[in-house]
Each structure stands twice: as C-alpha cells, then as structure tokens.
Image 1: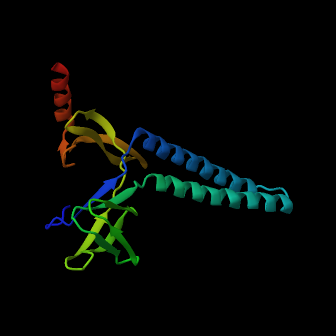
Image 2 (image 1 turned 90 degrees about the vertical axis):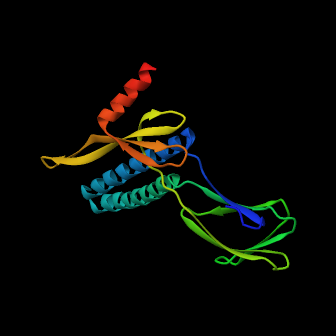
Image 3 (image 1 turned 90 degrees about the horizontal axis):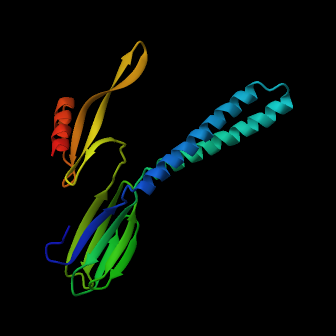
Length: 210
C-alpha cells in the first residue's frame, strides 16, 4: 500500500510454506503425538501400582509426561503459525517519524530507508506516521493474519492448484471421509472455484492428451 502523496509504502510479508516448513510441522506433530501417548501410558501405569511408593513415583512421572506433552503440543501448534513481517519504506526526501500507538514505541526512518517490524499472527498495528516537522500526519491501521490448511493436491500448473475436497459421513456410528469434489485455487488472486469429480477427470484427460 502506498501513501497518496508519496511519503511511504507499507508492505506485509508472510513466511512461505516451504518443504522444510512442512517437514518441521510434521516433525513437531509427531513428537507431540509420542509425548501424549507416553503421558497416557504413564497415567495407566500409575493406576496399576502395587504399593503406595510405586504409586507416588509413577504418579510423578505421569505428571511430568503430561506437562511435557502440553509443551510439545504447543510447539506443534506454533509451527503452524507463519511468521509475519511489516516493512515501512520511506519514499520521501525527508526523515519520517513513526509511532506505535499501542506499544508506545517510536522510530526515525531516514530518506529511502525502511523500518522492519515483526508482527504476531494475527496482529493489528496502529501507527502514527509523520514528517519530522509534523506538517504531514498519517494514521495507519495494518492488520495481518494467516492460517495453514492441508490439501491433497490433484493438479498444479503455473496458474492454479486443484485440490481434493472431502465430506464426512457417519456409517454405523463410524465416521468416514469420502471424496466430494475438487477445488481450483488461482495463484494470481487465490480465488476458488469448485469442480465436480467428472469435471476434474475431463480436465486431467484433456491435459494428458496435449
């Protein structure tokens, strides 16, 4: 976003979901699963103690395992939060003064230089931006947030991703997931459009015949 008179630009950058990021998420979830299983086994073990001393020792181990499991689970959840950074580029010929009105912080940015601010996910930054003499004062609210979704990729090209969409159904008290349709996601503007299973098959057949 650019300020109308050319004082500054503000841009938001989100962390990319790279292959390394996906591996980190899977690894953190795997460790959290092991820790949770260990906590459950420790609790069961304490319940079948043969004497009071054994019960105290096993109960203490169960408490430690439960606390560790909660930490590992929190770490796994934090891995799924993408980092967000805000950059404020001073595009003017004079120095800018930037105030964070929520945290009471102040920065001075030289001409043709940038200020980097690390944001939470999600987060809202309320800023007062002015020239050094306060002749031009601008108030900016910058909101940013993102979420990570897991998709089963059916097709990818330079223009879009096509992902499988499943629906849940209950059969004899058991929950199942069955393929319901596909969804095409544009890489340009992230707009989404549903495709039936037959439309997807025709699309793939057409692509393979080229």
